[in-house]
Length: 245
Image 1 (tube, rainbow, N blue to C red):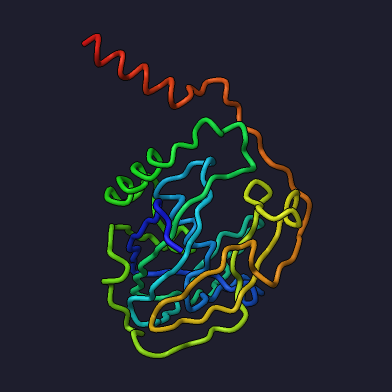
Image 2: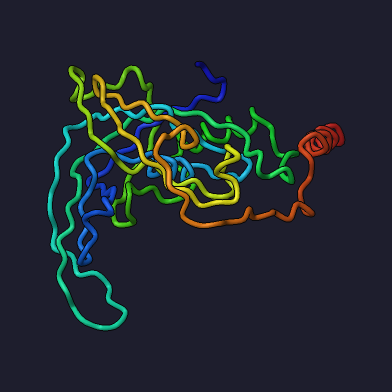
């Protein structure tokens, strides 16, 4: 399926840590071999965030070889102490990302902000500028950088063959991002079984994940739109200012 608001970008950095919860026992962390859907959503939101939008990551292309490196880390202990933990990071990573956005129907109060071309053009400019906020891959210490790319023209180290990664964490569906009725009013964790084909991993959206777990009940935040100006009225005001000048 083709989308008019499709976006593509390349994100890269020296390190990445897509933490596997199984390895956190004892305060140590070890990365998953590939980026999670949730991590790529986080990168995209750092580029340009609006609660009016729901981002959907369609595909990610693994550009560099999957390599890991371990570091001795002294995590902050609020009750005192000075323990040493081993963190395992991905090293020298680069990914090409392709996705699109849809409207967040859980926020009807933001309906007047649903101008597709406006958000698409801003998103493209923010990709060129490297994002509005700091970009990082998985954890805050893994600083990363974003630039525009042509997804199909990027070359992957794994251009030939197929690799399955087994059951893996996919994402969390928050109450204000739920699309399916079964997920509304809940905090839901999703899992999937990603397969990399010729360097590309295709994602199913969270609502289509077959393995889910509802963690707890949650509510949708309602935004105060009293200070908003409808888009059509704003355009008319701009036109009138230009005429007056």
